[in-house]
Length: 390
Ligand code: FEO
Image 1 (cartoon, rainbow, N blue to C red):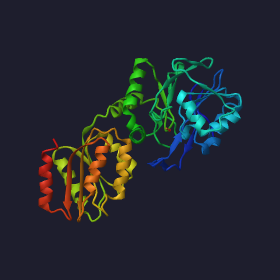
Image 2: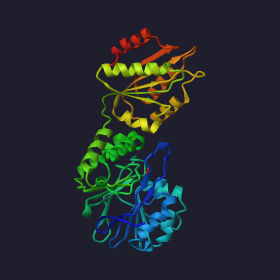
Image 3: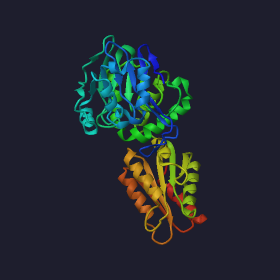
Image 4: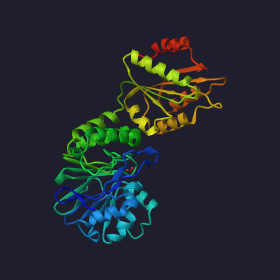
C-alpha cells in the first residue's frame, strides 16, 4: 500500500475502513477512512494517525516514502481514538519524534494512553512550528468535535488539515473530491455534519468567522475522514455556513412507528396536509429507516412531526431511541408536532411532546386519536393544523 501525493512532498498515508458499518451508532453504509498525512521537509511530520487496527496499513504507506523511524514531529489534532489510535505504536517506532497537541489534547491523550516515554509539547495558538521550507500554524476549534479539537494550517501550500470538520464517512479508492461523484460526497458530508457536528453549530460559526478574519487562503482542505477537498471547497464551506446557522427551509419531516397502522394513518394525513400547503414533506418509518439516516432531514426541516402509538403505557422503543438520539444532536428551535393513536391509556403523545420540548423544539400541537382514525377525525386534524401551520 502506497502513499498518495497531495502536493510535492505532502502525502496521504491513512487507512481505509471498507467494512465499517457502525460508528458509535451512526450507520456508515459506505465505510470510512481515517486520514493521516505525511509532510516530508527538513522536519518530517505526521499529521494524525488512524484507528488502531489500521496501524499496519498506515505504516506501510509511510514506509513507501520514508523510514518511519525518521519522523521528527507528530501532530495530534484530536484525541478521539479514530485519529489517535495509532499513536502508541508510532511513538515507539519514531523514537525521536515530538508529539504536538492542544492543551486539552494533552490532558485527553494522557487519559487514553501510556504516555510516560512520549516527548509531548502543547502547541501555542499564534506560534508557528518551523519544518524547514514549510511551517505549521494551529487553530483551536473546541467542540468541533470534542473540547480538544484543533486544525493545522500549512500556509506555504494553502492547505488546511481540518480533522473532523468537512469530513465524510466514505471509503473509496480515490482520495480527492474531483475523482468521485460529487452528489455522493455531499450526501455523506451532510450526513456527517448532521450526525457528528450539528450540536456545535455556534462553535462552527465562530471557527468559520475566525478563519475569515485571519484571511487564510485555502486551496486544499484535508479532513480526517473521506475525500480531500481540492475542487469544491467553496461549496462545502458555503454548506457548513448554512448548516451551522440553523436556518431551515419550508420543509416538514414526519417520523413515526406504528402497531396496527393507525399512527401511520395520522402520519400520512400530516404528509397530505403539508403537501397541500406547499410545504415539502418527507416521511420516515422507523421500522425501515436508520435513525442516523433520518437526522440529515432534520437540518433543513422547519417542522418535525414525531408519532408513536401507546404500548404498555409508553411510546414504542424505536421512537424513544430516535428521540434520545435527536435530543443529543439537535440544536432545536424548530416547530414540532407529537402524534399517535392509542387504545385506552394513550401516554405516548405526551411523552413525545415532553422529549421534543427537552430537545428545545417548540411543540405547536399534540394529536392523539383513539383506535383507528376515521375520515372525520382526519379532517378535524387538518382543520386544526391550519391554525398552527402557516
Ligand atoms: Fe473522527 Fe471526533 O473523531
